[in-house]
Length: 283
Image (cartoon, rainbow, N blue to C red; front, side):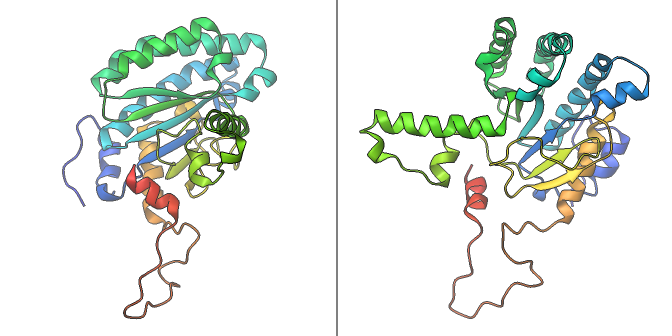
């Protein structure tokens, strides 16, 4: 265990951090931020109050993740389904909230050396929002610590459709469809997340037990941690609780646990980890 505590952690975060193995931190954490509406409803407030309060949760979570050395953090901020299932007034509020968040948080992202990226069908977002997104990405592009990715207008199924279309178009540009090669690596290279390792840990708030069309390909071997905490109440200490639970688990990638693994004979090479584990190690 490591006795040196990263600067900036509060007392509760420090207590939890000291129980962690800093050599076994997840490289990439993905979070399904859920519960804004219920948080507001329990307080007899409009739904938008929950979204507004959720910004503080984002800020605390991002800063704590960066402080402890997480390399990539992906937040499910706005799904494709939100366009269809939310009132226009709520969607408009969310777009405005996103623009304000980006404007306000860029100085803090730069201070913490955090680079901002996005995944999702960004071209379908309002022009003013896209302009602010581009500005924030450019303003943080030289940062080299953690990569913060916001999933905006995102759908995992749409991502897979776009990946296969990209594969087909690439083959057509390079000699025709007879040269089309479809395997795990080629698909991964055409996903929105091709610049990232697959998540090691996915956290879902509000106690719901579903993935909600989020990173379905990339989460194949991720550890899942569900907390009953509603997103507006989520803070860095809750992130550390998720990491602590992650470190209690044995990642198998479809293989056997250490207790049930077959004994290797002398002269026989042990079986290799799942290829996705190797990919993560290389990235």
